[in-house]
Amino acid sequence: IVMTEQIRTQPPVFEIAKHFGPFMAHIELPEEVVVNLTKMTDNLLKNPNTPSHGQQLAGVIHDEKLIYQQDFIDAGVNDMLEGCVRTYVYESIIRHGNPKDSLVETRINSAWIVSQYENEYNPEHTHSGCEISGVIYLKTPDTKGRRNFDSKKGKEDHDGDISFVHSATGNRNFDVFEKGVINMTPVPGLLVMFPSYLIHTVYPFIGEGERRCLPFNAIYRIMDKDKHFVAGNLANVVNPTFYEEKKPNE
Image (tube, rainbow, N blue to C red; front, side, top):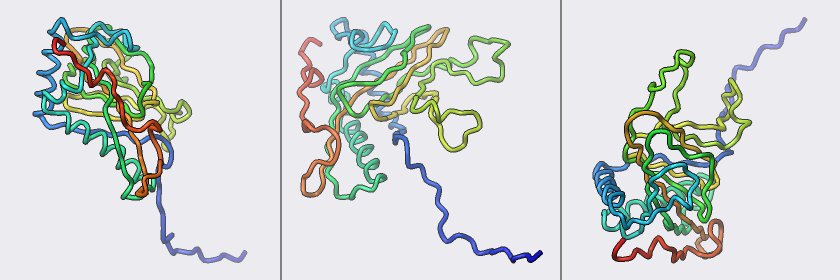
C-alpha cells in the first residue's frame, strides 16, 4: 500500500460567519437615563389622566400606559433614544454590506409603560405599524426560584424572562450551529432592540415585586448616497401619530 504524505499546510482563510437571522441590539443605558425614566414612569402611572394603552396590546397586564414624545423630551432622554435607534439600523446595514455613506432616517412612533405584577404575562406576539421594536427595563425583581418545585430543581427558571422566537428548527437538542429561541433575564438599564416581526413573549412570575419596562416602536428608511430608496418605510419617515400629540392635561 502506498501511503501519501499528508499535507500540513493550513488553509489560508478559515471563517465562520452567521449569515442568517436578525441582528439585535443590547445596550446598557447610563444610570441617569434609568433614574429619569423611572421618575417619569412613576408620575405617569400615578396620574389618573394618563391614557391606557392596554386595549391595543396583547398583554394580560392591568397597567399599560401611553407615553408621548413630549414625556421623553421632558425627561431629557429623547435624543439619546432616537440616537440608539439610528445607530442600531446603521450598524445593521453596514454588517450586511451596505456602503458606509448610506443615508439612514429613523423615528420612534409609539411607546408605553408595562407595569407587570404577579401572574400577569405577555403571550407570543409581534408588533405592527413599525419596523423596529425595543424595550427598556426599569425594575426587575429577582423572581427566580420562588415556585420551589422539587421536580424542577436544577432546571432553568424562566419566570419573568422575555423569550424571542425566530425559528423552531434552530432549537434542536445539541445543535451548536443555530439558536432559534433566546431567553433573556432582564436587568434595570438594559435596552434591547429587534425587528418588529420577531415573535416574543414574557413569562409570568409569582410573589411580590413590580417588573416595569418601557417598550417602544420605530420606523426607518435607508437611501443610497444618490437618495435612491434601499430599504425600510416606503412612505418616508414622517409619522404624525398620537405619539407626538400630547394634550396639556395628560
